[in-house]
Amino acid sequence: MVLKYYQLILGCQMNKSDAERVASFLESIGFVQTFDEKEANLICAQACSVRQSAVDRIKGRVDRWRAEQKRRPASNFLMTALTGCVLPADRKIFEKQFDLVCETNHLRQELVQRINGLTTVPTKRLAGKNSVEITDDDFFALAPKYSSKFRSYIPIQTGCNNFCTYCAVPYTKGPEQYRPYTKIVQEVKNLVKQGYKEITLLGQNVNTYCDQVKSQKVQFADLLKLINDIHGDFWIRFISSNPWDMSDEIIKAVAECQKVCEYVHLPLQSGSDKILKKMNRRYSQKEYLTLVDKIRAQIPNVAVTCDIIVGFPCETEKDFLETAKVMEKVKFDMAYIARYSPRPGTVAARFMKDNVSTKEKKRRERELERILRQSALERNQEYVGREVEALVEKVKSNPPTAEKVKSSSQKSKVLFGKTRTFKTVKLMSDRDLTGQIIKVKITKIREFGLEG
Ligand code: SF4
Image 1 (cartoon, rainbow, N blue to C red):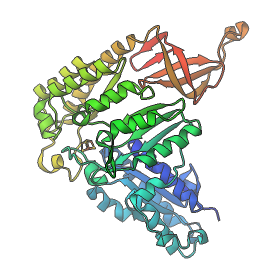
Image 2: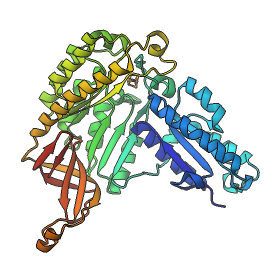
Image 3: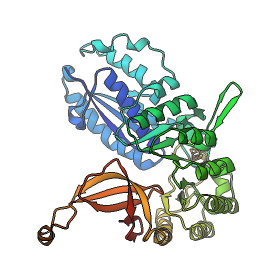
Image 4: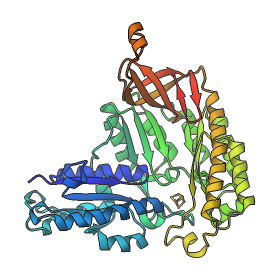
């Protein structure tokens, strides 16, 4: 009997990267991937408790899986496992609905024990695995089943010590932990050797990365330089950064390391000093603006993007206008705007009343989106006529029109890629160039994209 697994992956890149390692482990013990949940023997959900919408999506699917479990004969079992980012309050609910709920780095041990407990299942290959000692580092040591052949996300750090009052991460991922730099550099070297073109270093707060080996301290700026020195034609990106941990050394490293892309994602969350304080974010509006100026002065052509929350408890119209003011001033290339929703167990959920109505949150969101569309368009104007590099991500066939066939001038493929500044670029070609870094002359712009 071939055992099949299906993955439901929600949330951020960190979850997606963890899911690649989970897939690799499942295949190492004999499971085969399926993209059809109906034929799976194991459904493994990689949860995200950061947004209520992701939690709701799991709740919406789990009843269906439980009904399917009841229908299945013992010889064709279905097991459900939940891992990833799960808040204690959500965990209590999910423990009643899933066969197994555990931390991603404990999944291997727990899963092997459970499957070995299913006596009717031919799982000889799993015998003995349940005595394996598994640590965090062992989980990272697993070679992931990379989901792309040219782009890879490499975790360098997990957890967070910051406890922003709205955020679930410190409760779901625990305190900050860093992967040894030697292992990160080795993973990048292996990927570059295989032809990978884009490496994204991942963490909840990559800027605080620090690995100490004897008297040698490797901080994030040092790590960027070490990876930049790896021979090969590839780009380096990183997410996420905290404004208050964005040191001068990091800005200098981004400016000087040729392979590090000119792209900085700098979550703002609010432009109001009062709200920033309530969020436990350790910067003021003025400090944020000064930081953006410094980044723009030192990194030519850099794109700056951010996250913003609208409708945080006690956010008045005046506070909201401060956020709008920062958006007008900074002119972000992109902003990911979210309406506040309380996450159970966080300080904001426990002690602050969610007192901005949904209608008002939506209005504020729309207003910021309007400002964003203007600023993004303005930023993109700078690209017209310029030649930029783009990593081609995907191709779409372009059915030829009758006239174009006659003149045989139509390029038959539409390619989509990303520039170093993480802008989507669309271009025509007669060849599929997916996975290659190419030069594109920009001829047209839109608010959220370029054409060339
Ligand atoms: Fe959450 Fe980021 Fe704040 Fe950490 S720094 S608590 S991950 S929002």
